[in-house]
Image (cartoon, rainbow, N blue to C red; front, side, top):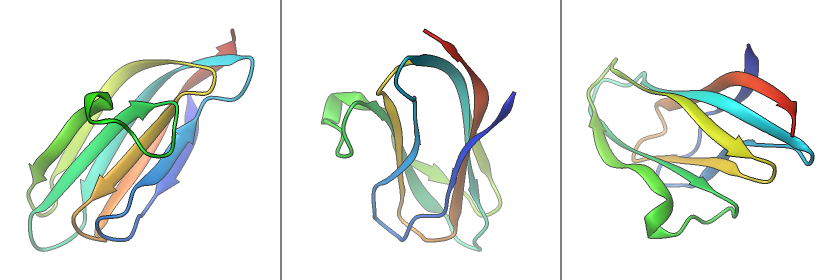
Amino acid sequence: MSILGTALPAANTLATLYEVPTGRRAVVNVAACNKGTAAAKVRVALTASATPAESEFIEFDVSLAATEVLERTALSLAAGQKIVVQASAATVSFNAWGIEEVA
């Protein structure tokens, strides 16, 4: 396994954490870590575009207490699919790690 992406997006701003390269597929784990002193709301989507549809969110406004971590594991993605993240505070960092292989 290796690190596939990291992000520390501005508050309430969508950010692409990871995109599966052409000709590849991946199994990915995602963690959101609230480094702040107040709760933050977190969103995670699996999508083919930079702006996910409402139906593509796998986490939506999940409350993450200060110093708390949210983790999703074994997300299976095809070439061109993205993990897009957002948080209500700029104190939430996102990390993706996993395995890429030839499709």
